[in-house]
Image (cartoon, rainbow, N blue to C red; front, side, top):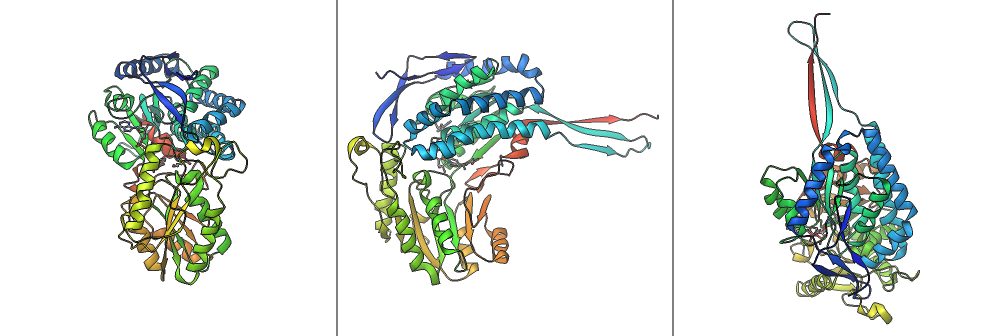
Length: 489
Ligand code: NAD
Ligand code: 6OD
């Protein structure tokens, strides 16, 4: 057994269980830690601790009290940034440069942003007319949902967990949170931070484990969980939705994508190539917003494919601690088998492999890691499975188009509707296309540029609801309307 142990955090105590599983470092394939799996009884204890906290001092906090707690949590993440970066890199294999510029600062930023938002977002107020002429006042107040189940994936572990935790706590809820079984480390560090920040016992509960038959299912099926917020695969979302129907619990789902980029011949060519290289290969393609379908106007198609292939070939897989490394591994051996199966399927479906398509030969510890080559395909028909199923790896397919109408139709030919990007020098075209592509998030001449106040989420298979800014506050609150009949005066 390795020395490091990741325990659950329930009712303000770190809890070991008799049942542990391996936490594997995907950059080496070696076991990094042991994780203590929570069973249904421990999840039940966490839910009861949450309700006890709501009945106690946490339930009496003001928005300003909670904003101050969130600011303290953010400051402590900053203070321990090196520990968080090391933990995230060990769990995901992502380059240190990425974890230290994106994942960990965004973890702190999520708490700061929602501290700011809960300070300023009040309710609605209306002066209403009445038949007797005296009038009435209507105003709304926010109350927490109760104990919220927060279930997170492995691709941006701290970023996506805190994206949901921060508004849930800002609104006065207690939470039972479960990180992915693949990435338990930063969530466990966060429990230490919650403790240090003075978050009362039972407000933040952390349970480790898997989905079906484990901690995930125990959270979702617990009758006293009052809302469920989930980020992960669309299929998992459908399963959770069926279970949440029992008791009519509200759900917020951020699910998968098969995102398109539309590149018009009037774009800034170099910016478009750089942007799409980032959109396809960042985090080894393991971001729900990543571009797997690139549609390029015919006149610039060949030049574009060659330039994008140059960017892919320049990526350096390897040790995440090496400053030269720009591409991490996939998260697990299982996920690599899935991605490699799409490499085979693409060839069967008639793809030309412009670059990549295999496993890189690496030396030293990285030889045991779950790396694949960044891969670009061309030549698939629009009906190919590889253009409709989410691969979630460093891949994209590039296809030519002739007209704007055709480009929009190709982008919309998907069961998913998470994100798209449009690359053009024409303002008119940018707005026209933005109005026609059926997605929740659309970037023009950029990709994954975030403002945490904006609505975030997808259409169709990509999710239910929007989070971000007041949309998060609305999901994590019950809004109560109060109506006062005014007297004669
Ligand atoms: P996943 O659905 O396999 O797992 C996500 C989480 O759900 C994990 O914590 C897992 O243990 C848990 N889980 C699995 N089955 C469960 C069940 N039956 N009941 C309760 N919990 C269960 O997803 P993943 O492989 O961790 O993440 C990759 C997927 O997430 C991709 O499809 C990606 O597009 C999607 N994703 C979407 C967004 C977004 O914002 N739209 C963000 C990140 C990832
Ligand atoms: O940046 C965010 O707020 C967010 N929810 C990103 C999701 C990325 C998906 O992998």
